[in-house]
Image 1 (cartoon, helix red, strand yellow):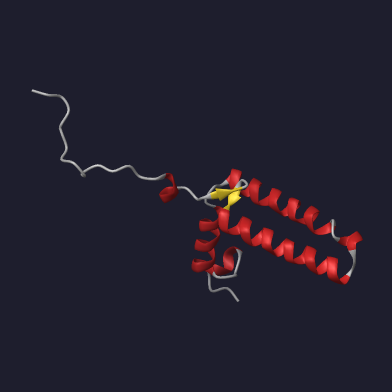
Image 2 (image 1 turned 90 degrees about the vertical axis):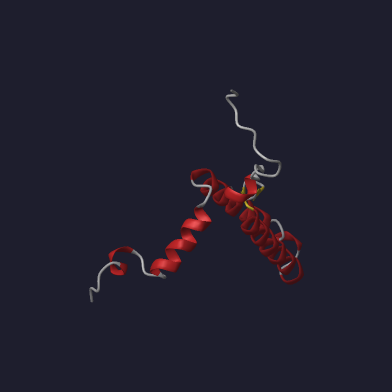
Length: 104
């Protein structure tokens, strides 16, 4: 008698990490990283055309700070985006005890 059961071909398939883990780029969720980068590139172009060349270094600094916050959030909880969406779906924009009670 064998100790291991033979399974038919195709019965077992590997599950890719992207199914249960968020896909990250530069240490943060890929969608939020892309949105954040495009927003600050647009702001840098706006600063360049409206305010001149000396203000063009401000948006990359703001982008780096925001990207650092996104990375820290991802290190703290890799699924922070899902937690935030679930909270907004369940409680809306109300924070605290008001979402649990019908208090004034």
